[in-house]
Image: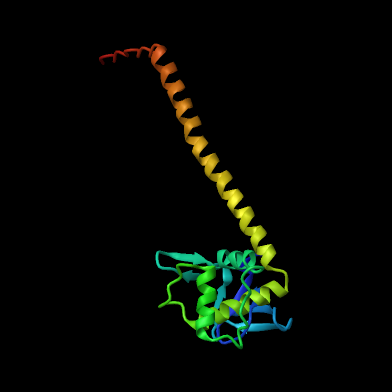
Length: 182
């Protein structure tokens, strides 16, 4: 499973796994209640977690990177209780996870939602699956970039060999054809 299979649905709490697509919406299974239901696309908007980013001062950071950092730091940096924590505690925790997050654009409600999502995914053991998928993507990207870097070199070598062969061979002489005068 990947983050593209898990959706946040506007107007509905929690996260949902996509079971099937329909022309007028999605059939989803709630991760928080494990109930399968149809959600109409004319009433709700669907956002895959893969498309969600967190604002930082320089650029944005993908949600899976934030989740991965949270998982790595979970032993040393406990996740605050979403229901009891005040805004200062939430912002302090967010600062420890993403040091350069944009404090003006990321609201306390966003941090609460992020923490709820993390806990929900972690309870379903999906954080480790997401991390494994991210590691596979990084390896595939590195391999692809190495292959792309090697291909032009091979093509360039073939072109120079072909050019050298063509210049060493004599060009075929064209025959002159005389037209008969009638």
